[in-house]
Amino acid sequence: MVKVRIPTPLRPMTGGKSEVETQASDIQAMIESLNGQFPGLKSRICDDAGEIRRFVNIYLNEEDIRFMKGKDTPLKDGDQISIVPAIAGGAEESVSADSRAGGCGENQRTRREAIPAALNNHQAFGSSKLGGRVQ
Image 1 (cartoon, rainbow, N blue to C red):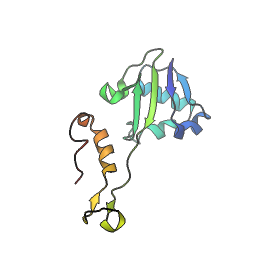
Image 2: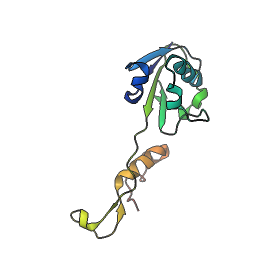
Image 3: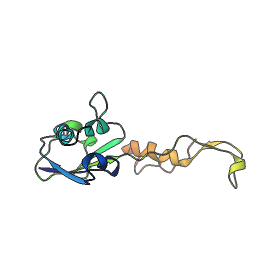
Image 4: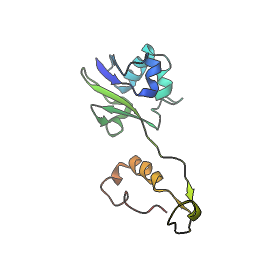
């Protein structure tokens, strides 16, 4: 059996359970098994083509499966799976000099949108890309 941590937005589908157990040989089988126990759960995790949605992260024992074998990542008894909805910044936003104190008078995108872009590029960690100015 593997233990699967369920994020808050999906808990209504699991009867409020924050953690469930299932038998599965890999991530794909785990998703199918969970969908059998909790109908409709797969459509919240996967798109129409059956691929894990872009903004859903799945971790096996705290390691992102995208850097393993994705849906084909093998599972063994005792593994811990975490389903984590990605956190994204807001839409692009222009800030005018009139709406902020000490503005420079030019419209610019806010820095908050640089963070999700950097998080989507794991190679950016530890580089100057995170601290750079957003244009």
